[in-house]
Each structure stands twice: as C-alpha cells, then as structure tokens.
Length: 128
Image (tube, rainbow, N blue to C red):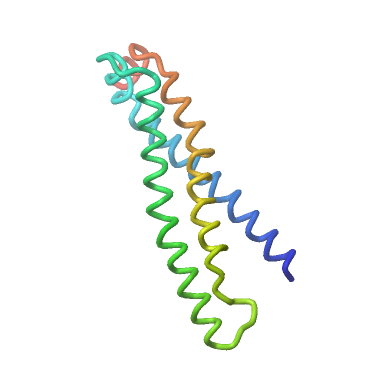
C-alpha cells in the first residue's frame, strides 16, 4: 500500500511540474511584446529570468500553501476518524512545502530561459 501511495505522489508531482512549466511558457508567450520592450529599454536577460522565476515561485506558493493546509486538515480529520494511514506528520508536510518550492525553481527554469533568450527587436516586431 505504501508503494502505491509513493507512486501516486511521484505521478502527482510530475503532473504538477508539467502544468507549471506549460502555464508559465504560455504566460511568457502572451507577454512577448512586454518582454521585448523591457529588453529593448535596458533590462538584462538576468532581469527577465529573475522576474519569471519570482512569478513562478509566487504561483507555486499560492497553490502549495493552501494545498499543504488542506492536507493537514484532511489528515487531522481522518486521524480523528480512526484511520491509521492518516496521521499528521509535520515533517512530511514541511517536506511537501519545500518540494513545492523546489518544483517552482526546476519548472520555472525552462520558461525563464526562453523568455530571457528573446531578441528584443524580434519580440516587439512579432507582437505589434
């Protein structure tokens, strides 16, 4: 049973990572003109990467914190109902929160690199 739960967790994390990456790539594609304009007015590639990484981290934390809180509440409720598999282990929930932050860094790197690599003139010309 434990292996099944571990496998399910791995699949959930992989799916969450794919969703984060795809969402951020889509957001960067919609903001091509803005990124090109920022690059044309002096923002460095590192500035663009930093902005995208911060946005990714904010999105993941905005979803991760309520998710961990919901997990704690659900585990507490199930533990009160006498289910042995649902005990509240704070180390596990802290690990989940740290995993969310690491997932943001890993999955935000691809869109950040793509946004920073945009040529300013091409980005602005294609969107105007």
